[in-house]
Length: 136
Image 1 (cartoon, helix red, strand yellow):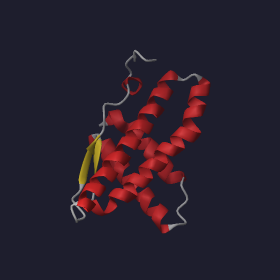
Image 2: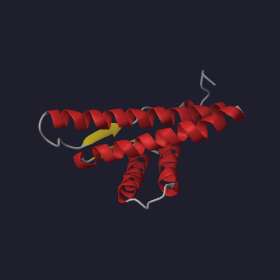
Image 3: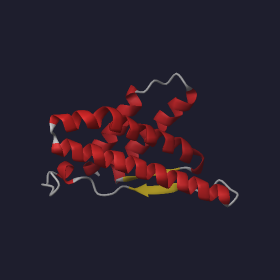
């Protein structure tokens, strides 16, 4: 799924730039690298039940980083295509957070850990596919 290489690259970038002094943070970055590999290969990812919350926290961190650090710079540069990519990445990461945490909560309410969750990504923004977007 080469259309998702940009998103996989974002996930890997965040994972590589985040300090791993804390074992929990290191585990979250491993989750991001795993998600990135799956996203690049098939346009989605699967998360084991015991890693749902950890992966959700990692994706929330990606969204926060993009929102606070990257998006303002892209907007200031007037880069419409880049802005579409970054906004898509933020929305996609947060959608993943919501889906993972909802799945974990439903399993907890049912009195168990539940099973793995498969997440398919929405189509990438037109800017990534080299098409003109009506919003740019």
